[in-house]
Length: 191
Image 1 (cartoon, helix red, strand yellow):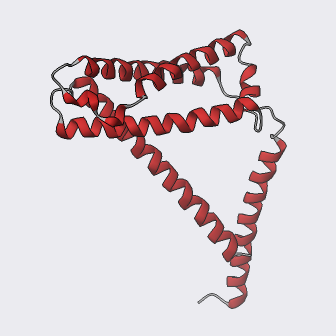
Image 2 (spheres, rainbow, N blue to C red; image 1 turned 60 degrees about the vertical axis):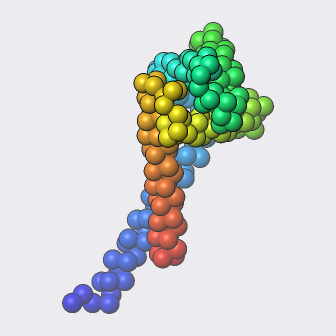
Image 3 (cartoon, rainbow, N blue to C red; image 1 turned 60 degrees about the horizontal axis):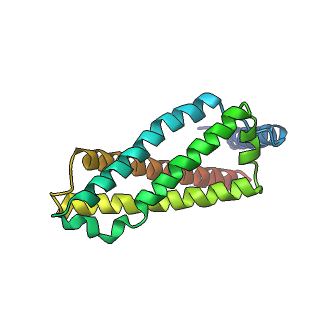
């Protein structure tokens, strides 16, 4: 059975280890926080290569559903403004990409710096995009359940793609909350 002194020593060493690792991560983040945010241009290019065709697929799918004259699914309220939003979003992404390329990706730092108009606009556009993705998912779910005339391979792909996407996002948010809570609990226990 360990003595009280060795248990206290082990507890103190664990406590100091946790405090030091948290302090080091905070100091590392603060020392690098000189408004010099960098993201690899490769990541930006790959993101655009993946997301723009998916947005185009959304627009094509919704346009095809609207053309179906004998299908009542084109009148469902879930799809209001989705096609227009993703058309805007494609142009927005292409304009940003042209700006980034023309500035040799130096403008990226200005774009993502906190409390600038570009940053605030980007947050608003991101929130609106997530709202539109949720509306799209609800629309796809509705036509999957109740409308065979409009649910084809493109719609099935989009439905499962966004289902997996939202599942991953929700899982990551849940894991982040668990990690933050566990760190808060651990630091409070060893105060």
